[in-house]
Image (cartoon, rainbow, N blue to C red; front, top):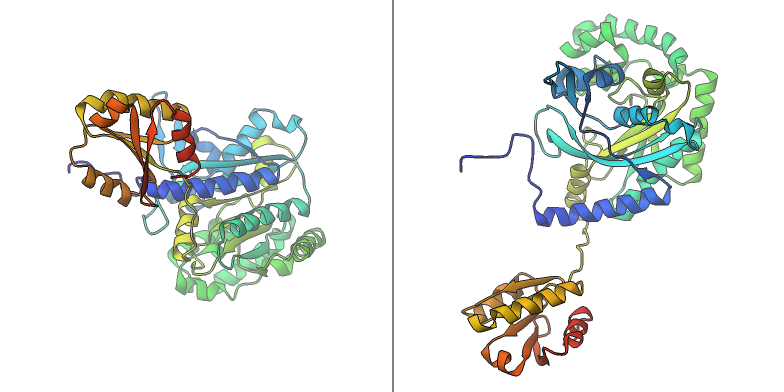
Length: 423
């Protein structure tokens, strides 16, 4: 075949979408329980929005963005992450005038130019939440609780929260001095990217995924040991609330996340069988992003995760994903004379809300029945010349291997038999 999908993208086939739709339905149920409302932002934004908010030295900006000039000469970027566009929409649409916090959830495609691998695609979908306009640790824990409740509902095995505090801008001043000194003492041990980070954004070195570099960085001074009193008190309250909720968490002192706008609480969620590099969710507080975009001194907390990643996790853990239980029914005509009447019957049953497949002029009824049975059809309504003369149909229950003759004039009996699973 001459055409193939672009590298790093995928076709979502019906069986996969059955799983997708179930996961999405649970996500909508849990977010509704926490009073979040859905938002959808444009698929592309001004490039400057992501450069100013994600950080000019972040991997997203330096390596992964799909950026182009439109016909008006404006630099446009396909959306690589969901938080910045949602915050932009919050200010542009004056949602700050509503009751605070404004609680929003989304399921949207994201685009990142990175090496495709298991669970990572250049076009992928994220589900996430943003809680904007209120500063307190209860918001932090509410979002973490939402995600853990979502994973519990799905049946994810052994989810655990990794937790850290990045402090505030004041905390980081002294900490950065200590970190830079540590990095400079053995700069030759750093990978090439961390050597650049040392001079541009040393905190980002802590997020390095290079194994050799990681072994050295694990000895770096810890941000949690340099928190100011306010940040320390805030973090203690977060931990206390998580304990009250009996949420399983561990402190990860090197956890910094990959975006510049985070401060104070950050978290990731891991699960059984998922590697440390492939966590299933993450997020944190981002007060500085609100200042950057809207110029206001407020607070927000958000988190996101990949739809493909959670489905992959459920499959890896052999967690059964329920399928929609639809009674699949076929109307089959076995003669050309019955085609039109079979068509009208199928349409009448569809109008009653039933899922109906129409098969006309079937030549080999035995082969047709076997094919329908193997494809999980529950019922077959057969119409031939005899049935046309008698104004009847043969109603076969494939699972119970029973059949009965039903009058075409008694559409209600046909409908009830199918809908209630009666033979």
